[in-house]
Image (cartoon, rainbow, N blue to C red; front, side, top):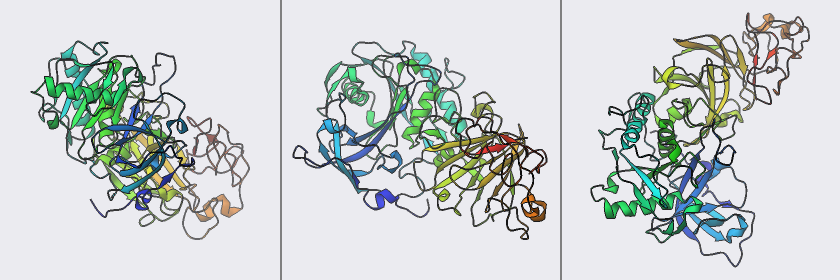
Length: 550
């Protein structure tokens, strides 16, 4: 596993003080273990019952020493990536709930005046306890009948066939098949390892108390309390099911009643507690929802776009439901299911030199991405970039637009064992993209792209315009070296690059309207067939970075 590292926030005990002052109404310190729960929104093509798109919700919970799970609220905006993660032992000083929210909350919710991680497991490059490589997930699947609303489906065979392969009613794409294909046979979510579906509804009263004494009201969608009550019923009424034998439990809740989400899942599962996931009854036959929530159990966070920590990476399974696709490159790497063809950094990649690699389709070879750590830049060194080609079963999304038929570029925090991943760009064949949001100076070129693989050339710029004109390097990564670069020859004609919302006009700081020679009005062509005016397909409206068009 390599050298152990402490994440910065935990190395200094992660004191997270809030702006509100402690008052006489505050209680005594509460001790517990963090459990993160995260929502999976409905299918991006569907609206909730109120006609609004359901977005993500990330919940921080505190598991008390008696096993009870309490919702934890913070009265200020916070960066999710800097909060203690699942499994961290914390001390919380409560304050009146009104200081966190004016909205009704379920009983037992804690408003934190301050929180300190007083015991944190040393972290290496992966989350402590995260399954990596070979995974054997023994799953118990149950349907909840809450308030007598009924279960999601009476077709038990079809439900079982959505989960597992090789059955009379198995779907073409099952949860088992997705894990098998996306992990290159390293994840076994099968009946052979003990996967079981209980073929009777589990009744849950509308209200009452959990075995731990926690009051609940089903009108508030208390999903965790429902599962506590369900577990108690199972222990009393289904002795043939030993709950302790099933590390992973999936609870299917009734269709479209009080829970306006597609799924929920623990983000990582701390020792001594089970791994739980919840599926909205409307999505009981969508394998991607199960795949997404179980992947949360494996410590994966969401796949966003341009650093937004949301769902907007449609190329990754941790983005929106419900297209069939595997995880993106950084998430596959986090799980140990994929590795790089090469990792580039300042140690093996000088500035101004082009590197060319062939990337196989991610679905056919576990060594399928190029990874770049831009450690030459203090700002960009906080991230690692991943370049990957996605096709086939791995990528059901239509092969067009900003995700299909192109090399996808992802970013993830370099030192976060449970990173939020970010889609940065999709670079088509015959185009070139210059990274701008993170400040790495990396240029990505795709000379060719077909079903067999993608040829990718990358360069890291050390100068905005060529100034070192005798060193034999392409310092500005425009495809021209020294005297061949018009910057060294005194410049070229001005150009008129397109706008499209890019920070650099036309998506390219050096061509098509660049002060250093341009494509629009008779300047030079950085690459034969690759230069020219500013082209920012798919990047209008403020997208960072951009292409140099053909």
